[in-house]
Length: 156
Image 1 (cartoon, one colour):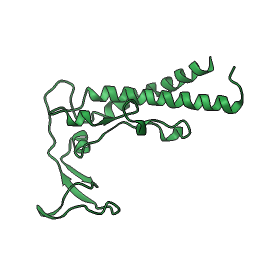
Image 2 (tube, helix red, strand yellow; image 1 turned 90 degrees about the vertical axis):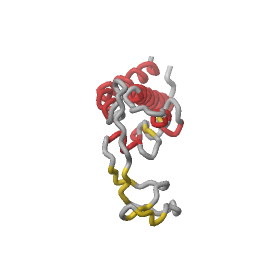
Image 3 (tube, helix red, strand yellow; image 1 turned 45 degrees about the vertical axis):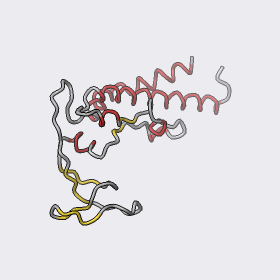
Image 4 (cartoon, one colour; image 1 turned 60 degrees about the vertical axis):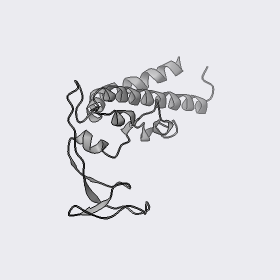
């Protein structure tokens, strides 16, 4: 027996969050097969609900969902396959015409600048750019099923 309406709502929200987290873990698993690998730093930087509590969906705030990300300074450039990125990052020197004019020291300010990364294209099978967005697009039709199955288990 489920008990009160509030108890049932909490159980359903927890099950829905679990489904969203399971879905995100599946996206991460598919993505890790496509991540370009040279030394393995990019692949090793993956954060997702299964290995990072901060990436999990909160049952109290389902609309924020779960997160899958890669935590290297060059991840976005590698993902997009573009060497020139308009980014904000606290560890990159500020340059003008190829000359370093300063560094980020005040993390409360936002500096916008262009950063040029060398985008590497590796030859290992399956590795490519869009290694995160493609698995997300491919798996999205299954999201409702992940959530529904978790909720169905609770309601039985």
